[in-house]
Length: 215
Image (tube, rainbow, N blue to C red; front, side, top):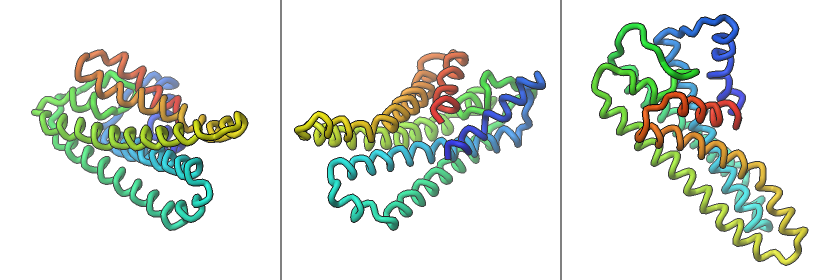
């Protein structure tokens, strides 16, 4: 998923730098936005599933193989794919219904949803409502699930008597926790800060963190 996620933006960005031609067609822009939203959403859901996996492994180690059986894992991945695909399709269809003026300049290194909506010449109230509702529901909901899982994990680790046992339990979560911190702090910052400021430079910088660096 991370390889696909970066493949939606990085090759085009490198091509633009190499050729000094920063042009993309309308169809190409909508397509890039769809796949970016698809894999960003999938990253979002899979990070939540991974947090639940770590919670079961640390808090219920004896029942891990029973709870996290192949059927449940497959179901969680399938639901993640379906929800991500539907969300990306919904956003892309709504954006494709907007009217744009000729010769637009997107102040970003890819066709980012929020920038596209801001550049539209028609009414964007519905787009903003759906966009922020999606961020709060999907991003906020997933983050709440991750934080809940880690609160239980920390509580369980504190109950371990040996220092070596605590270190071993925490080390299984360290890489996941660092990725979660980078991904959510940057991605949520992009959308929440856009409501207060119109600085495209800070938005693009934060987007690099969750769209390129984290994956």
